[in-house]
Each structure stands twice: as C-alpha cells, then as structure tokens.
Image (tube, rainbow, N blue to C red; front, side):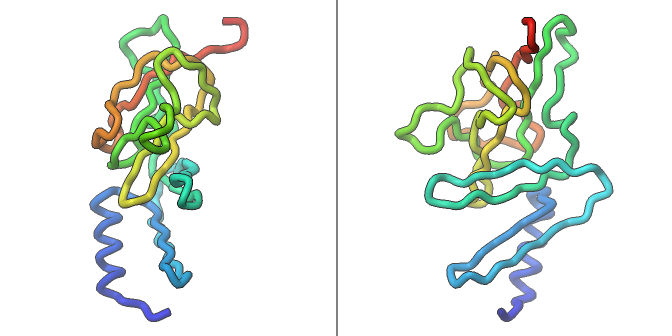
Amino acid sequence: MQVDFEQLRQLLAMMREYDLSELELTSENGDKVSLKKRDKNPVQTIVAAAAPQVSPQPLTIGSTTASLFEKPKDDPNENIVVIKSPMVGTFYRSPNPESPAFVSEGDNVTPDSTVCILEAMKVFNEIKADCEGIVKEILVDNEEPVEYGQPLMRIKVVTIGD
C-alpha cells in the first residue's frame, strides 16, 4: 500500500475537527488505515455497530463515563442518568426508516440496550444505555444533528427492590 501523505494530513485534520481519538478506514481492496490519538485522560470505549449492511466498528471516545452518563444536579430525589452524545453526528432512533425505534419513553432498558444510532462520516455507531432503568425522556428528534456532549435522553435508573 502506498501512503498518500496529503490524504493522511486531511484525515488528521478531520480527526481534530470532529474531536476523534481513533479513526479506522478500510478501502474496497482491503487496505486498512488506523489512526489513534494518544490522550492523557481516561478513555471510554463505545462499541459502534453499523447499519445491517456494514460490520461493527469500535469507536473510542476521549472522555470519562461520568461526562457521558451523568446525573443531573437539578433533582436529587430522582436517580436520573443523562445520556450525552459522544460525538458530533446525526441522531437516529431506529436502524432504518422502516424499523421501529430502539426505545421510546417509558421503555425498560438494560446496560446493553441500544438506545439510538449516531452517524458520523458515514459510520453508524450504536449508543448503549449503560444502565438499567426506564427511558424517561428523549431529548432529540429523529435525524437531528447533535453536538459532542449534547444530552440525548434521560433514564430513570432502577435498582433491585424499586
């Protein structure tokens, strides 16, 4: 594989622009490029699965779990987790327009439940609930662009005995 340094510079610029810490690309002929930015902060890994026609891709986000899944400070009596966007992209409630939404308000979720998909640069990334509870509020409309750190939904955490 021949390295095109201009394309490499463009990929690095794109990583800076979208605040990505890792980028992996595979060409049609099977050549792979993997770029990783070293970060002094702890790193959280979100498993990103593409739409049915694309295989899952790992996505590493340079932030801690506390910043992506945090309790709001406005209501100390209710155990609420706010799921925030780990990237800039487009929010999708279902895997495709014909499919039902992953979750709706009032649905029960587990830590492994997919709650939405975020599309960034033609890669579809599944976002997991990362907690057990009930979807209290979905804060973003389907196909709406989202920013890094933007609240996507609120989940009332349910523990055994509730």
